Image (cartoon, rainbow over all chains, first blue to last red; front, side):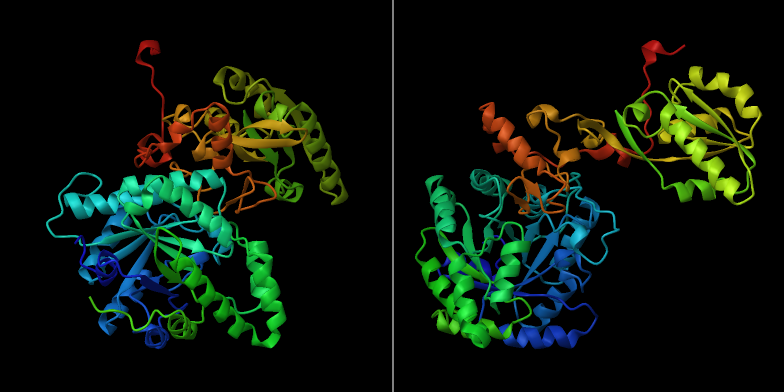
Length: 306
Length: 223
């Protein structure tokens, strides 16, 4: 055991893991987190707390994660390289650990041009691969990047993202291998809407034996409407929504949300059979209610206790 | 070369609103080549200022000059006689030029007419693209001679983020190429993709601006 988190135990036991996502509020309102947490509790093994995703200011992932710990849910704090240099990042890792957070997803971070403060200065002192290596060093060597010793344990289960659909496609597996070399324990992928391409990616992963070295959780997003599907296809770089899904959502009309959940369940069932996939990461964006239905429908309940 | 672009005319006009006799000073090097502050642009700006002020019944006398380089004392110092005649100077040099003029003529206000953009290259007629961020510790040999610090919007050293699509950067797909796609394509062509399998450790930014104001000192050349 590296961190002893629930997610780590589930994956170590060979069980199919389920993680979900909780977007912290654009306010200091704890009740927002309370409500969302209630919708997720018991339906997943751990919950991602996004770190000012799409560069929009929200409650910090560490604060929200700390609130989840108090409520008995397991957080996966996200940490990006956009807003902090290596001093602030390491300081936040210490604080997060002190608050009982045991999982961290190491990300590069969305560029600030997409958010509500496009005039801001970005940092990118480290990149996501440096970030993984930094946290691993803190955990395994009990040392800061600068070499000073840390006089406490730093039990973190280290995660990272990978986008199998970004370009250059052939380089994505190499990038995954670099993250593994840096010390990553688990991967959550970008949302999958192109199953053949994802399977091709996983084949390349398995060909290099990388599935033996890291636990890969396949990312899915339940669609709410045909409009959302078209928007994502057109505007989110690295996300290509297959026409099949757009057509099904359009045909469902006002029952789009039901169809979105149905598609998501079918995808999870298909993903379970893909060699190398050890779990799913369900990103129900501002739709946490969907998680219980999806987990139930996909036969993922009850969540095991380990 | 240093690439610059002229500020909006109204901004320049406002800067010199209270002067009656000024010098518009061009530079014959980088900013001449990028059509921002050479002899021709000096003539255009000086005429525009005269006309704008004349229409307000507040005539201004505008002298014009262009020197070889505003960033070297030996070209700047001979300007003394000219600058003594005016109340202020509008420099059409880059940020370095403006500061060099100010340094040699401490009694005068020097105003910038240009926005200095970057260190780059003319890639097409009327298009100048950034190439170097002057980080102070060149890493081009690791990336097939394409700089990820200057040409990736996030200066990533270990490969592209998820926002690279069809060779474009998601920050501005119409105008920014993904630097990492360029690096990948070039190393693939050179059969050197092995270079990209290596994990690059956190960069030491002390040689960049982060280490404080920089100065190059060659002991062997000092007097």
